[in-house]
Amino acid sequence: MRLPLTYYARIAVLAGLLSHAGVAADAPPAPPQQFIVLNTSGRADAAEFFAAVRREFPATPQAPTRVGVAGIFSYLREPPAQLRASLAAFLSLAEQYDMPIVVQLDGEQWWDGRPDLWNWWDPARPGFNPQNRANVEWSGWGPQHALRIAWRNWGQQLRVLPPPNLMSPAYRSACHQEMAALIPIIMDWWHGLPPPRRDLLVGIKLGWESSVGVNAWYYPDGNALADRPPAEDPQTGLKNTEVPARGVTPIGYAAASQAGIRTSGELTEKDLAEIAARHLEDLCREAARLGVPRDRLFTHTAGWKDGELLYQAAVNRFSCPGWSFYRHANDPAKDTGARDALARSDAPYWAAVEWLGGGPSVEAWRAALTHTLADPRCRFLTLYNWEGIERNPVALRAIEHVVEHRHGHPAD
Image (cartoon, rainbow, N blue to C red):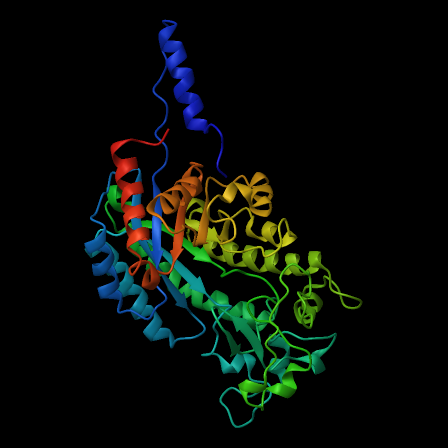
């Protein structure tokens, strides 16, 4: 995370001391290029999104810090042919606008398009199969506790499908199948770029705050609410610091059983973190098999309690770790969970893969961005979302200032 004196600064100081002493010293290595990436919520037309970002931030291919964009491709939500066409168009726009990109492949937050995996309860809907109980999470030990509904709060509480059993063989096979179709599209495009333009691919991101019972949680006796009006739903939400259940009904029994982590007793924080870690490592192993190099592959987890074990799930031998930063966005060095996990990682980079900091002034925003990028191993930070940032002149000015300052005055 942010260091009092970076590795590169130490090298520069040493080189200066040797020079003054009359000893020849090689020039210090240039810090790696870093990126401020603007994510789209997906509501905007992709071509207009690229054009709008480029109008606001001119291309600076050689700058130490560049502006890029991110897109989310939920491969279990959209029809495969449509998704592949959208991905190909996204890559083409990146090349057209000389825009660095992060491609997020999501198979866990949205899987509406695969009722053949999750519909175990409704014979009148597509995909119905009672055996699909094995592919969704449970609220107890056994398929009789299979969920048919869950809740999420991304700005407001909403009903969502039951979350996948992350260890289900059928679910894992579906993820692998879609990745095997999508990743070669990205890699063929990347290898087709001239070497000086290869940094247009900042990274491929796998996972989306990967966890159990957070972005899809289950209220007590939640299945009984599924056929009642949403207005009758509880509104208590999560108590995020109360791990592992976080103030609602514990889930994770299906994955723990399938993985052989536990088949009885109470689920623990360690159990749920292990499920997320195995899920991400499996995805990253598959991406590596498909040719994605480690320095272009990033995970995405988060922590809602300082130092919780879930942070560690981001670290594996195939990828670079990534975390969400909200509470500690203005200075990620204060996030003990991410800091401790990073200390265990031998990856070349890490990333603030979902980030929203700033404040009321340009200086507050500038400081937050600068603190996050202070560690040369931080390859990028991704602002969520462009649809809000483009209406925030303070944030836009701060991004412009950071990019221009680092272009004119390389980071210490």
